[in-house]
Image (cartoon, rainbow, N blue to C red; front, side):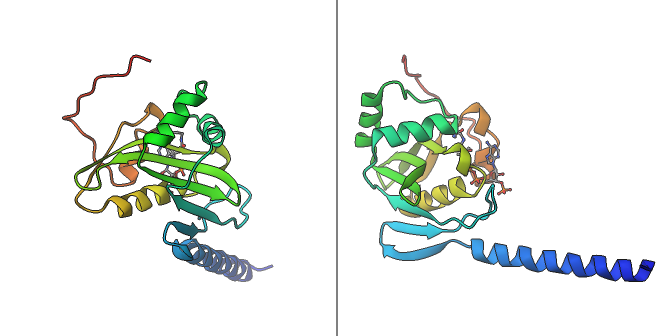
Length: 184
Ligand SMILES: CC(C)(COP(=O)(O)OP(=O)(O)OC[C@H]1O[C@@H](n2cnc3c(N)ncnc32)[C@H](O)[C@@H]1OP(=O)(O)O)[C@@H](O)C(=O)NCCC(=O)NCCS
């Protein structure tokens, strides 16, 4: 093969890859599903096995404590998962929970408390380890922001491992925050 034909072959391969990428990006655009007012579908843009898998997002869908504990533990987030009764109370008393589902399997939890008027505290954002880095966290934050609207300030206390995550999603670092920590 001459140098010129090698070059044109290389360019042709590049074109194919670029076309594939464009197609993937197009398919990755989230869309409002016809499921119901409180369910959305979205094809994540990244997948470990590169398989197309549809994630469904649900608003305030009742969650089993055991499923949430599984997601928390798998994600690496530090929550009192050895105390299922406390997790049940956390779920019962939160008023804005978005969950992500891969079929019937819970794979993401976004748990927040808000007055829908002025402030919202995002307490837990956790994605099952096998589903991380596929845009699910970003999508859940987008849905949360849509639910609370523009009047509401969204506050999160980031875990050390996610300090550089939230700025990617448009969060600004707070220099004027205070807290009284929990004792247990
Ligand atoms: C942090 C976490 C919620 C991110 O969710 P995710 O669905 O994996 O993240 P996304 O796929 O939406 O990532 C969005 C962007 O952030 C980046 N990102 C993902 N995790 C990150 C992290 N821990 N730190 C910095 N950036 C991160 C992604 O690469 C992606 O970048 P891109 O837009 O340039 O491609 C998830 O990894 C998780 O559950 N971690 C353990 C629990 C935790 O730390 N929760 C937050 C504390 S409350």
